[in-house]
Image (cartoon, rainbow, N blue to C red; front, side, top):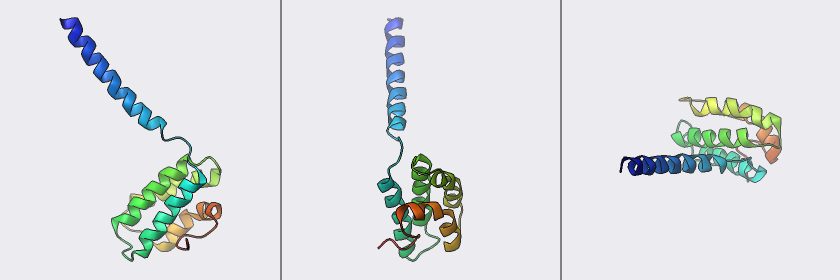
Length: 116
């Protein structure tokens, strides 16, 4: 009976670990469309008019993660650290965001804030 309990616990634990790992594996390389969609989401949050709103920082955090996974440009990948730093801050400026996203703007074909 003890072996059965240990075996069951081991299987449950293994299943939990595998489900977490499969979720991580689903986060493969990002596409240009994913990158530009997240870039435009930051712009959309800026248009809402509340620059210190958590939405801007949340969208920047998503963009940082996507940029880090983008294999199409090492410059985009390198920009992820700066964007992540901004996403974790309590305030930023439009110039700071634009400077951090220059490589992404080049890839997406438009600067931050001009996604129309």
